[in-house]
Length: 297
Image (cartoon, rainbow, N blue to C red; front, side, top):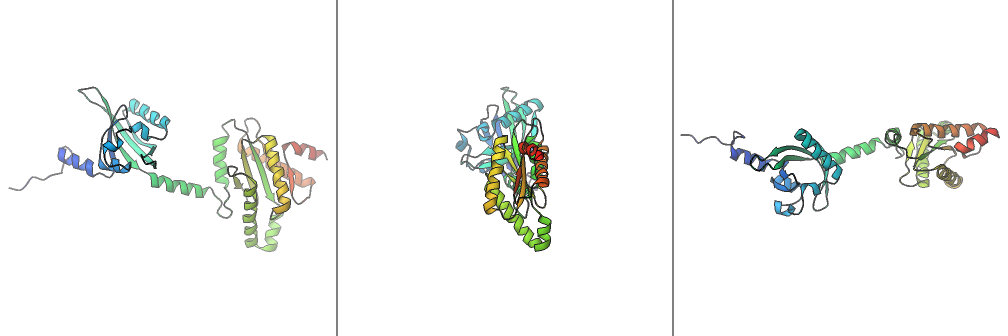
């Protein structure tokens, strides 16, 4: 008589136990208070511990970095009975941060009426890191290392719906096309790199320099008032007399009530264009307030 075949059905307790123990995804059971009741080896390995006892003082809620996200997840589970691929950031006991997709469903113990959560975690930390790196690269100009128009569009979407103030400085290298024609594109590229480094040195790290055209740059001054934007522009003008690689023009503007970032940038550009008509100095500067005075001179 042949031996019975094993591990052929999930209805078989031994098959199910083997499945859970050997699965590489982290499986767990928690109480409605967040107590970790049981888990498979992959769960403990994910959190960098050996056994459940190593997590005796830590509940599921304490592992989640953002408590508001955890609350939103639990509210969705209570409403729908389950949640699928809910993205969370966890912190391991050793301080390492993880990004996971959490799939959970709710069950009730018919004998005690206790609410329990059965879930599975999929570690996507490496994938998120790669996505972030690719996203970061996609927002950088490959030649100069400045941010690009894609970054500017994202900032417009993020900032424009708020009431936050900001300032913009628009920079345009003077006669760059003629310079390119005379010295060649390689020299022109080198000049753009040197110009971008000059601009980055004039502002703080949190004030991004954005290349918006062939020889055009924008500096975004978050939270800046009119006087602060003007001060940065004047400081840049003074530095240009000493260390700028080529002559350039700049104009500045600050946000008007309810204005989109792109509109502020456009006004800064128009201020620059207005001063070009009436001045021919190597490095020129004008702003929203100065433009009216200049137009009358």
